[in-house]
Amino acid sequence: MKQSFAALIVGLVFGVGLVLSGMTSPDKVVGFLDVFGEWDPSLAFVMGGAVLTYAPIRLWVLQRDKPVLDTSFEEPVGGKIDAPLLVGAAVFGVGWGLVGFCPGPAIVSVGTAVQPVLLFVACMGGGMALHKVMVGAESK
Image 1 (cartoon, rainbow, N blue to C red):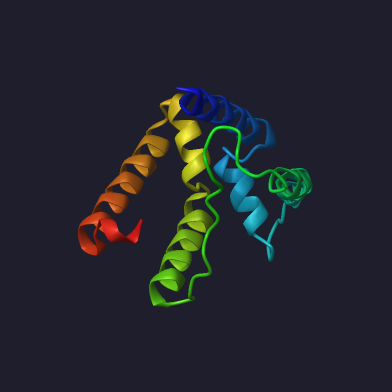
Image 2 (cartoon, rainbow, N blue to C red):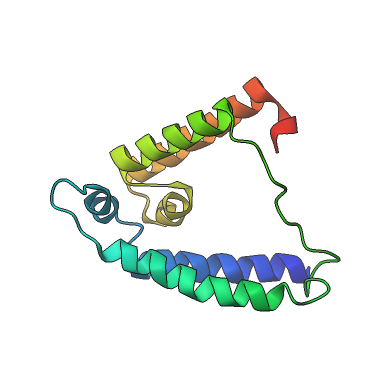
């Protein structure tokens, strides 16, 4: 129960941060990605602020023996750079550049009930389901 409540609070803070930073605006994101056109560097400050906030807190938290709401830390293990990773990164990047949404801001924007957002999230869910069918659950 504590973990679910903590996840809810963190998700709400994350969503509010996405809205306040402008990352839920596809035009803002595409403007940031358009480095050879009318580039809008403001999201670089958002990302930089996130890294500057996250990095020292992460170092401080990892000095603990275990997380507050779990029995151990789950760190990613060193993975290999292979074709599925590169293809997935390319599809993500192209989709983000063309549409201006990545999963987090898209889900936050569902609350607007704007048709393109709902279509994007539906297609994203369909892509996730297709991946699960094609690759299987072992890719988690």
